[in-house]
Structures are given as C-alpha cells and as structure tokens.
Image 1 (cartoon, rainbow, N blue to C red):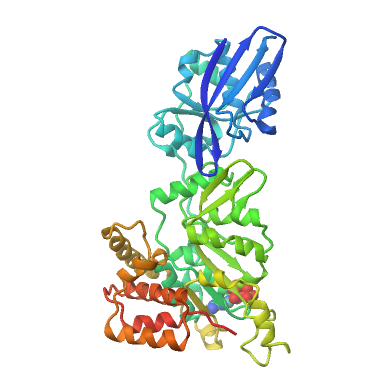
Image 2: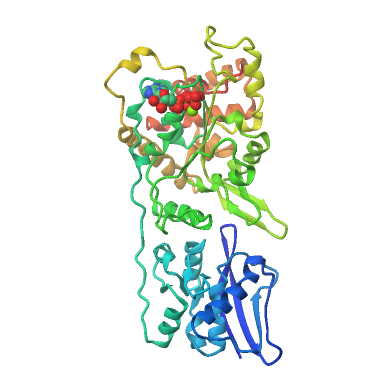
Length: 503
Ligand SMILES: Nc1ncnc2c1ncn2[C@@H]1O[C@H](COP(=O)(O)OP(=O)(O)OP(=O)(O)O)[C@@H](O)[C@H]1O
Ligand SMILES: [Mg+2]
C-alpha cells in the first residue's frame, strides 16, 4: 500500500517542498528511510514506532520504505517525524490519503504520540500558503503559523487528535495569531543621556539615513547607552518587516511562544562570539546574530576585542544585506540588512585623549589597538564620532534632553522623504546608506559653494574614492533631515566632521 504527502526542507530562509512517500510491501519486516536523511531524520523511525505503539497501533511486519524526494536535497531536523507518521497512517488507510494532499505537515513526535514544537513553522506556513495548501503543525507553534494569512491550519497536540480529525470524530480548531507584548527595550529613552550632544546628533543622522555608526571614546562616556537607544528612534517595524524578522527568529528557534516580533531587533553579541554565532552557519546551518538583527541594529561593543576573522566575515553581509553560507552540499542565504553600530575605546587603557590618565605607551598603543580593525571594515562605516567624557555640569543638570519620541518623529520624516525619492526613481533602495555610484551622484546635486568645498576637502583630507562617497551620502541625509532638495555646503561641512579619525 502506498501514500504520499508533502513536507518541507529549509535551506537558509528558502523553503523547498519535499514529498514523503510511504510504501508497505510484503517482505521481511524492515523500516528504511531513504532520500539523504541526516541522523535526526534517521532516528524518526524509532520515534514513529514508539508513537504508534503509544496509540495502540502496531506497524505491520511488512517491508516499510519511506522515501523523501527530491533525493539530492539534504533532509535535516526532526520535523519529518509527523509527515512520516501521517504517510504511514494513510498507507494503512487509517487516515483517508486524499485528505492529506491538501496539507503540508511538519512536527516532531515524542514517544507517546504527542507532537512537539519545532523550528521554522512560520516559513513553512508561508510556503504552504504560496502553494495554496494548508499546514499541519504542532499545537505549540499554531500562533506563529496563523500569521501566514488565510490558510487552513491544523495545530495538533497529538497524533491521535489528527486521526480523529480526519475521521471526523474531533475537530481541531484553528489557532489565534499571537503577538509579542512591547518589551522594556522601548522604554529606553534618549532623555536619560546627559550632554553628549554631538553623539546624539550622530545617532539621529545614523537613524535617518540608515548609516553605520562608530563611536570612539573613553570608558563610561555613554557609548553603550547611546547605542541601546537607537531602536527607540527608528520607525516601528512594517508588517512585512515584522514577518521577515519573525521568519528568521523562527528558523533559529528564538521565537517566544511563536509570537510575532514587534520591536525592531537590537542584537549586541559579546565580543567572544564565534564566527558561526555572529555570521551564521555551523553544523546545522542557523542564522547568526547579523541575521537575527535583520531590519534592526547590530551593536558590536568593544569592537577591537572581536576576533579579526570574525569581523572580516562581516564585510560581505554588511555590503550585500544578506549572508551567504557555503555548506558541503548547498549554499544557504539568510537576509541580514542591518544597521551596524560599533563602539570602542581609542586604546587599551581608554584614556588616550586625557594626558593625565593615559598610560605610558600612548599614542603608539592606540595605533596598535585600532589596527585590529581592517580598513575595509572601517570603510563600511559612514559615521565616525568621538564621544568625549561627560562634563560634570552636564551630569549635574536635572532636566533631561529631547525625548526619543520627538527625535523618532524627525527620523520618520527624513526616512519618508528618502523612500519616496528612491521610489519615484524606480530604484530598489529605501535609504541613503544604500545609495552608491551613479545613484548617489544622481541624487546629490551640489550647489557651486558645495562643489568648491568638496574639491578642497578631497585634496586637503586626501579622501579616498570611498571616503568621498561616504561624505556625499551623509551630506544627502543631512539635507533630507532639513527636507532640502539641494545638498548645501553646510551639509557637506558637517558630513566631513564625521569622517574617520586616524591616530
Ligand atoms: N551621558 C551620560 N548621561 C548619563 N549617564 C551616563 C552618561 N554616560 C555614562 N553614564 C553612566 O555610566 C554608565 C556607563 O555608561 P556606558 O556603559 O554607556 O559607557 P561606555 O562609554 O559604553 O563605556 P565603556 O567604554 O567602558 O564600555 C551608564 O550606565 C550610566 O549610568
Ligand atoms: Mg560600553
């Protein structure tokens, strides 16, 4: 007897339809799974046996073959348990085989027939919707699947409840879409930061144009505080962005009870993070921190303390907005459009600019410390800002500065202007940070004074071609922040002040 149904395989963010075929034939009692299964899939056999036993069913002593097609795609993970069990139940005619063809099934079985939560339910549900099919998934993941839109979802708690559902003796009710409650992260306000007006201004520019930002300063100046407040001044996630972020978190198993993400991601991995943890990959490919921060902020505190190879591996994803991981038998891609914020001390002791406190090796130690970061990585950071120590009178002042809410309003206005400009030009860009080459030249028309200033600055600061473009990009954002069409000399002058400082 034969039955077939669909499940999925994940290759990065990409979802591939997999056929699960079950064949019961006369012969020696043998249960084999073919079609490039990994160890977890091969172990399905034992879990399915046991789950059937738990239901009071015993598998016939026929030869059982499960084929997972296409055979050249590696099948990884434990989510094949449920489709294998359902295909067997359909082959045994305990479930009508026709009923299953309308669904994609994913789930892990426990030994007593319960269906356990798995990774990647939302991408699987969206894939099912694109095929016009429904989804059979673990009950614990129903809330996540419900965001896929108008599809039939069967969130099942046990294998028995599914048999009863298809027999018509029990109805599995559709799940409710769940949403994350606002977290305390949104409570962090720029108002808490005393003084540091230049750094706050740089933070607003970074937020407005989507620019990467590097903050350089002595210990305790407020760099980490500033970075943590960036998501609070960025516009809220659009529904599409929320769905994209939730898909990545779902694949990484980082979704809290399957709830849709609402807050803009802010990821601050520790500097001891390994390359797979930061960029993604590993034995079973998983999204890294840079992908978990997709459409949000990746904050690298104490930048020079990260390993050099790890930092270098960030160059490609930062440029392309996606991470490509090469594996033994496939290439997988994860989206990773992030805004990088980095913070560092100027040297190991941190007090380079304070002669009374700097160590005896200054300024050579600063050069050594900063040389840990390669030029190309520095080059990907549009805004470099020095965060000086907070002045005593600023610290003692009681009244706070501007609130995050007020800054966020301005940021939104500047971003809306950029979005409509690039849309009207038919370009797939949303913010100035992603404009380069001809696009950048096209959108930054300088007046006479601006042209003269840029020429002079390029010569006297010896700006590289990349450095030149960086200044133009930031100047464009500064003009957008004042809703000005032409980029003026004042914008260029300010942009030049955020260029890289060498020691
Ligand atoms: N501008 C500021 N206004 C108010 N409090 C501040 C400010 N700067 C620093 N602080 C206080 O100092 C603490 C340390 O600040 P923070 O961790 O942001 O410093 P940092 O610049 O990141 O230092 P490090 O280089 O050591 O990482 C904060 O938790 C806060 O209490
Ligand atoms: Mg810090």
